[in-house]
Length: 179
Image (cartoon, rainbow, N blue to C red; front, side):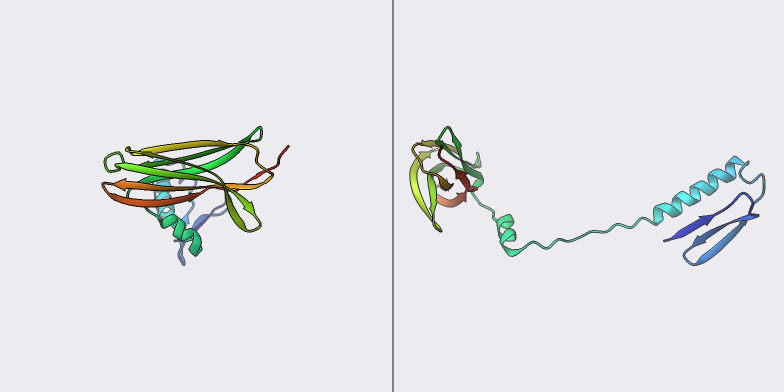
């Protein structure tokens, strides 16, 4: 709904244009002196304004690869993450997986530090652990590494009873320059 309001001190009336209809009101000197009339006009205008609000929703297209990532859900695994950082030439590698406290009975975790050679990822070092619990934190260090691009591949098996669920998490790539 669209409306326009026009008035001027020297005009003898004011015009209210609402959806193709022109409404002309006489402009008396005491018109705005009367508080009740002024309040009524302001309330009518407020109601007209509130009816003119349009709500729009926008849909955004997500490419197929992102859509698959967003829809990945696991039955036994609540969250998983892994990463590598370099401190004074030492690679600090971490992996963490959490199941559901009421359902998860066992977790096996395998943490792989990988170095990119050409287009292939080569395993530099491996750590593993197993717990009869609903969460697992795995950490390791690697020294004497050459410069290059590294990442962590964290493979976990989260159990509910005897039924395992495999989750593979690949971290962001980190570029290391040997000093």
